[in-house]
Image (cartoon, rainbow, N blue to C red; front, side, top):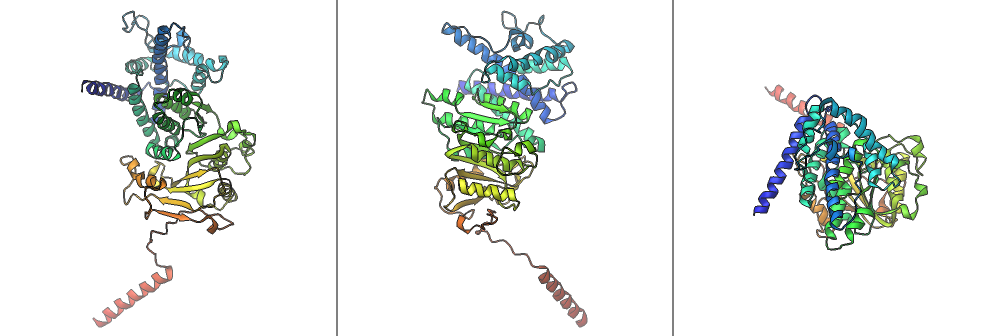
Length: 494
């Protein structure tokens, strides 16, 4: 019982620290003007605080076995040197701390340039130095008030990272920040996919230790984090599994700087310390150059949509389109190994659009892969209000068996910030997918042989739902005439 009380106290202090930091970032001098800025500024500070705490732990571990450990950062760039120097008894050394303009000058002209140079100086692209350099290459310190920055540093210093419980608590708090970033509007929403949806998708994909998992549009890293947690839980008793999961399993890509940094920090807090996330445009990869070594076993993703692809990237694909979601669909199919499986969130209009590219991608999907399930989601699952579906498919096509559909109907529940999607909402779908439930009005199948050969329209049309038939214009006109005639008769009688 005492341990539970101690845990609650630790959680409370971490949550209190995050709340206090948020309040500071609202103040003039933080350089922040919204949720996205708060995320960026707290992320780089949190990353350096975490790195320093883990360095202390590794130094102790190395000393215990008689080894020499070389820290990842030069001494002058370490948190314990510039942010929170201490005396021999562990207290803040007030004679050495930087504050005010002196602190801002150091961060702007020494810390950030020094961290960025680590990428150029690194001889191994998989090294921690290269990753740190890549992260800070995309960041800037927005603080203009060094005294305010000093206050934020002192609030962040007490955070603990040493135990799995510490990191779990911080990951929960960080996820809540990502959710707030998603609620900040379209720019933030593109980074954040509801975690209950991701967890359900991961369970149904069922990735195994030894398989490679990829998300080429990883946003804030939700699919990578949840896949790692799922695989780690299943292999807790396997001593070799940890190293395989840390170093040989996860790959991703992200083109937006803030999302890239958020993904790195999010993975770290979830225990995945070395995800191979590439900063850059995934669509710049030429799919014709993929070898078996490049391919993966499992993909979970929510790719961006919109006509934003440049003409150079379009040349990397066999189907010409500027719609990024369509390009990602071709990328995912090319990236999968034979018999690899994927779960992809995409706009529901992909199922029915009649433009040449959409039809060609649907044809490729049905020919190369076995489309197993189409999950139709309510419109407000995402803050932007986009109507989406999840496609579950396996690369062992063509699709010859009936395609399963499930239309998630929350029966009048209005999704939003105060009532987000939860895992209970998806429970029946998950049970049907696994064969544990056989019948539901939300489920039906389509025989691929019945599809229109020209359009291959895969639209969601639930035959179990009888929609109220609206009267035609002629019927309305006749009804109105009848009402007027009846009114005329009543007036004549009067």
